[in-house]
Length: 115
Length: 115
Image: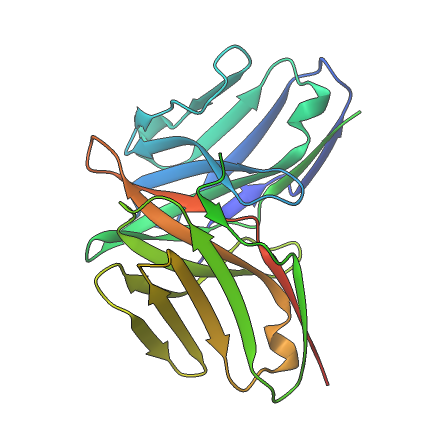
């Protein structure tokens, strides 16, 4: 079974440029998450989707970040315009619910460098 | 405010010996505790978990211990193998108002197992 797929794996852009990340979750997983992992830190949740609905986006900086999950499968995360502080690894994860907690399966991430 | 703390950024152990990774938390409402392992250029992968009502969970070479009174958990790896060399993240689930179990990660501990 294929895991969570993310692209691109690496992206280098200049500040003020736009950038987009793509995620394809594990087939059948209706819950999708975007995380940001800063250097030396653990992943932090940005947004969670249940099917195509964003149900938890309180951590998403809405002035420059946007996300969508059309048709409840693939998702894209966009930053426009990017700032130096946005340099991080952006991780996508999807969930199968087991007992009372979510076992989240993570993709390899997109490493963003903003110059 | 860091609710899940991993105070040791790195740990070096010889092959065959025990590795003990530690994690402290501040939120007494956490329901589940999980350990994720992360290799370079890959996303975190789930390793083992423990419910807040248990004090021990074992899976092969991996055992997680939970001390609720001390708000402390640890991951024991016995015997350690070179392939265990990775970054280990401690995480905890926090139930939100919507019933969603949000994962809160620590900063990670880099384990190096030398032959």
